[in-house]
Image (cartoon, rainbow, N blue to C red; front, top):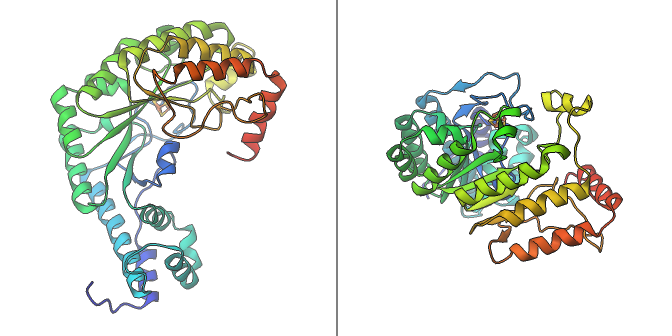
Length: 369
Ligand code: SF4
């Protein structure tokens, strides 16, 4: 380690000057691994799904490569400042509580500095994973995305996994060689919002993609070597469409056979067209038992070798002992081996009174679990 003549105060002053763009959303599994968050585009290039409030009112921004590279450089500079402080304190480069305490004692403003917080948490968790924001990074021109990924991997060599959100429609339009180039440049995993495999429902919620394009996009991504994580949305079709929604989703997911299948039950969000439909009674949501029946149809129809995950607080159903029906970890249930177990858990949930499921869901919401 080279001699570092800066005082602690000088390090803090430098940290306060350094910042890079961070978007508001990332998948829970990326929070679990304290991924470094970097914004390669801003907001959603589609932004029309009727259930989604995430980027409403914000226009899509295609960021120039040089800007993104400069953000990566600033994240690296923050890393270096924090590491220098660690060495100065005798922690030998380890990023721990002592380092945090010393920095915050020097300036409490650092607590509100999101660039510092994200880099600090990332480093203290080993600095291994990064998540590229926002809603559809694959929209970037392939050579530009490759340049960003190469710079990221060169500048932050501790990374062993880089992931991002992608739309199936965008993936379906990419040539296989483009996808392979992006994969080889260092992008490992794609998080894709499938929501449903039912064409009628896809059109109703204005997802901007067909089931066939979802299959094409997912398969192309897997063929290019990506790990693929597909999210489906129980209850998106409400009571009336739940059977078709479940069966067609199982059909499409089976055709893709992604590495991960993650359940994200519908939550009507204020300000969305779907919220209005529910408020005006045009869309009737399912009861907890009806949602479990829908799950049983979907899970029963899955012919995959995937991990099926319930890693979100909205998957809150009670078991017969008042605990949670499903495991909540990010690796989930291994299919096909654990498919009978998941179906058994659903049968158990159907034997629990609906009021108990409602109670558990409220508890999860109140405690933001
Ligand atoms: S594509 Fe994703 S982020 Fe964009 S509007 Fe639809 S659900 Fe929201």
